[in-house]
Image (cartoon, rainbow, N blue to C red; front, side, top):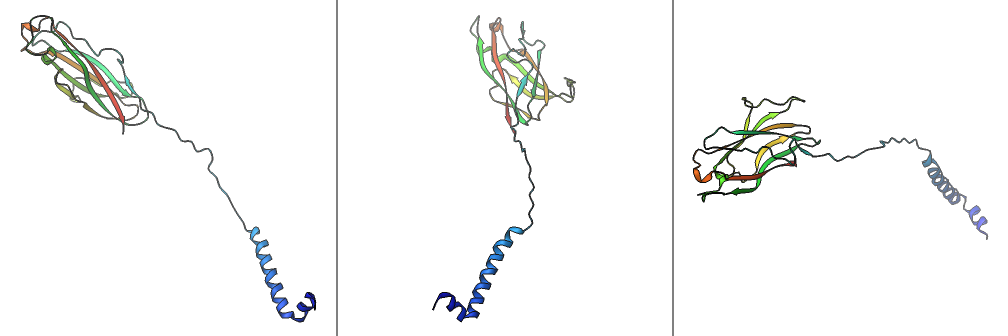
Length: 196
């Protein structure tokens, strides 16, 4: 008995097998006929922000008080500090590289300990307009001697594009005696910015 004869002898079983095969083929063929849709968002660009501290007197002294006399009026200097980047940042001011020179009689203490220093934040610029200094909007950043300024003074957070004006005022303390005549001190002021 051939295979065809065997299938013909059992028609019901043959029909069930044939129907199952046809149904499977229909499912396979029909699955490619579904509707579909696609949407895309091209050209996504990722850019890092910037943080740049600008100093109107970068590389130069804020001021160099001279001919200071005990109890005399303060001498002043002005500097503008800005965050010209796009990211907000916390700014600080520190003093380093302090040196005192003793030219005459031996001093009981370094000359820098007799230099009184006040650093004032006059406030933020309004566009291109500088803030007024010496008004109620001023904020004292540091008030002490040049020698004692040994830590970072917090200046607050500057948003991108924010600029402040600072005034430095120095005077020789009234207690400075004759032994301080002709003496001097030098220091560097450093402005640091750290992203928020």
